[in-house]
Figure (tube, rainbow over the protein chains, first blue to last red):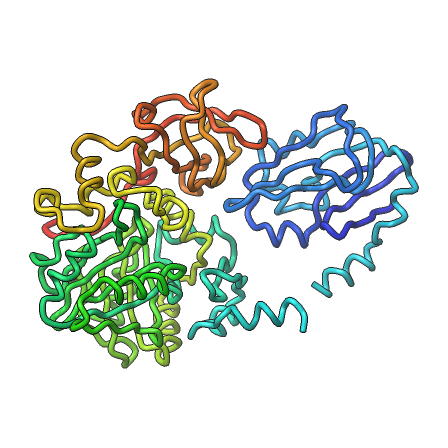
Length: 123
Length: 373
């Protein structure tokens, strides 16, 4: 399993042809208390860089973008009852959705953990 | 020169800037200043204020002094308040209005022994000062206390914390003020605020702001609170925010601020926009500010459109998630025929219609300590 990161602070963990997507610890800290997450329905096609979900903090709504193109296979139902999982476990139980990759080559442009850490440090 | 340098040139720092940063505040540009938006998180800070005491830095707001012969009558010519009969050390919520009755700003007005003390919104202070210079008689003196800081201590334990270090403040009642000494500094303290809680606002010379903030923050009831929680608290309290819930397209009647236009002023008029404002107060305004509670957990934000079935009836002007009630709440304007409590309406958020119901405000009861109570 390999994890990649985007400049918009999403992470994508890939195993074979499927992947799990969420927002990073850095992102949840910036957003503050998460009170609602709007997730894509299974079967939805998302495109790399396109809007895939919306995360709402007490104060504001923010878009979450798809790191790669693919078809959503599962949305994290646990976030409906407890959106604060995004704050407490952003890169674990607070995942957003799983998808089937359309083109694994799209992963090549994303950052690895080390690259993402350096990117956050530069912000 | 990069963008950050450009921003640094425009964004000003206030006396407690370093104090906030030392305490881990996230600072954001607000009303031309760098201000603390949050420390440990909006929900925790919000709930702390509702149960104990929160210390807010609101130094971005404008503090003005107006003095001279006939100042009370002169203020009545630019605002709809009753200032001629206002007792010394008493304060009133009032409004600067344009000639159509549109709201230019909302503000607090206090009669003190020698002058009137005004607190106006930070983003509006330059415009307000220009407006007052233009409309008040030349003989009056207008001073901007731009070196002063303003702190708000809000919450049910604010009185315990503040009276321990500043004996006598407990004798103040809601909407009254007085001169005190705090951390060795001369301060003006009023029992007022904008969170719906009991609390105080403390005006201090900028150079003593840190000493006062340190003394207050050292009290066990007190934590520093950011502007994020200030916004969620005032929304729960049903209090409108200028530039969002109030602007020149709204008047006191539409905004539900009829209390700011007392009976004598309605009868006598003599303030900007009096004809329109008094007609709307007497006969009803075409639009009304309402509160909304949404079903589910998804909040509706400023700008979301309000529907009654297929008909658009209004717009949300403030919206968020209520930490106290654990539901999304909003404030907005609707056509007068759709403003009755318990009416079911819908709010469109990103193409989806959310169910909402018109709710009385405040959403969370006020806990002011009034005279005689």
